[in-house]
Image (cartoon, rainbow, N blue to C red; front, top):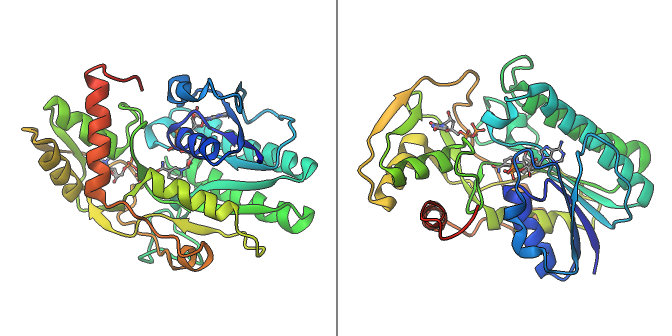
Length: 317
Ligand code: NAD
Ligand code: UDP
């Protein structure tokens, strides 16, 4: 049994990760400031004596004896991370410094939830880890993109200079149950709109692509990466390489929900990446043959069921 700290543990991905780590027999400390997370996502874990919940902001130092740290604290939806861009940068950068300092002090292994956004609007397709990216350093997405890029630099430098055992994963668009219905990301937006019979809002012409990963595939990849033993620190892409346009996603959602919603087009936000697809050959090689298992259609069905139950008040977020 390991004692594991999950920052951002009350968020979408973090709540799934906490549950999986507890099921694997570990002690889990979930730290969150509830900016985009909620207690209700982890309420079902509260009775477990090996689960602890701490309200804390990762931009402030925190001291605890742990074996491993998964650093997830950071809003991930463009709507949320652009709400207070300076806070987003502080969360990524000061959060990384605080958690790396903690890892150094207690000798913990630490994994950073980085992002495909470090590739910006990529000119190389699909994106391998050696691609340096194409990021606008002063655009509306820069608080997130550059914050995460700086965090990667901090992770590598704490490893090089201080011998901290670090792991960096670059997560590509992930979806699933426990996303917030008003999160602003495309999968939750389209499903909620379809279930309510409202217009499906495609930004731009809808020809931009994303590659959608179901949350259980991500959690498996995170754990595999944390457990690598051969000094491999990454960064490594964790995503589903099957690529869709936003038009295709909307059509899939309409079909699966049997919705009468119509597609409408709204202006494309600035710096919205035109294409995104992970090259996952490194993950396959280094993470025991890891590759995503859940096809978009199956993952969407589960996610639609979740949002449908939320709307009918059969479950809480
Ligand atoms: P989320 O917004 O649901 O979860 C983030 C969690 O971090 C929330 O619980 C939030 O309250 C918490 N948080 C935010 N700022 C904090 C702070 N200062 N101190 C403590 N807690 C704080 O997002 P998510 O989709 O679960 O993403 C989790 C992590 O994975 C993030 O770091 C994100 O950048 C990364 N990621 C996610 C995706 C994706 O598609 N879901 C893609 C790439 C990277
Ligand atoms: N998008 C859209 N309609 C929406 C929300 C998002 O067409 O209601 C588009 C958005 O412009 C982007 C893609 O869907 O091209 C993915 O957006 P999301 O915010 O989910 O993630 P990110 O842009 O960070 O990959």
